[in-house]
Image 1: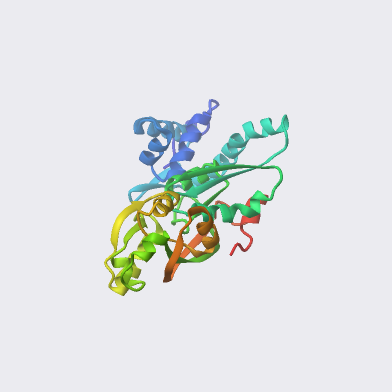
Image 2: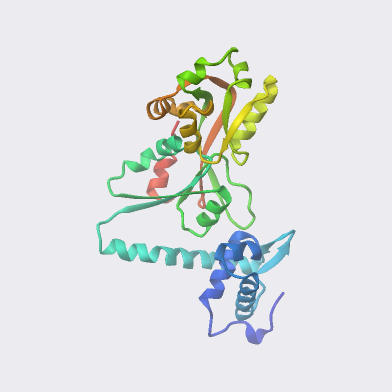
Length: 302
């Protein structure tokens, strides 16, 4: 769709209209953008239409249940990315110019990712003497939205980024870990059957279904004909381990942080969860990473 030539370019170009269009394109739809911006759907829609009128071209077109960029929209999006990335960085650049120099790293942490693993994955960046680390925890979709808006430099997750036609995301494998079952000494001593069949009698604590690990655990139980006695499900991995350390039940954890588990939670290993692997990814918006600390994270971690 092309608007009348007399409206091709307005001398009153509005950057707020551009910002709303930018968020709509990142989120893939007006409703999701309105939720992100916490304003009415009608307001977002009207602002985007005003931008299209001022530029003289349609920037978005329907595709399934969402919206995708037109050719004109792709060009506008490239420029908006540059504009708002500069805008996001402006307060920090000004503050850094008048204070002690720091290297800022904003990390999104998927809420299902084990916190001990997160700490281990971030160790290469923590060696930076002038590091200013900002960690934000949330669900993967929300974190990827913030990543697309350049509020985050990288997202750590237990799964690669989903395909999104409006956002170029790159998933970098950081490594993987085998899984084992852990519990207090008293809990392990109470088992009457041999491992792994004792998992049918012992109380179990599991991650919630939104984690990639839960699907693998469910399949592991099914393959062995074990009906687990689940007494608790946790979205937060640290909370799961805290309740496990209190004696509420046996829980799965990455063996990569085995020593840390024993030191922090005073638990013991019951047995391996053979064949179950937990994967760790760093997700970014660049194929070639430029942030020096993100580059450090992408060095072989495991």
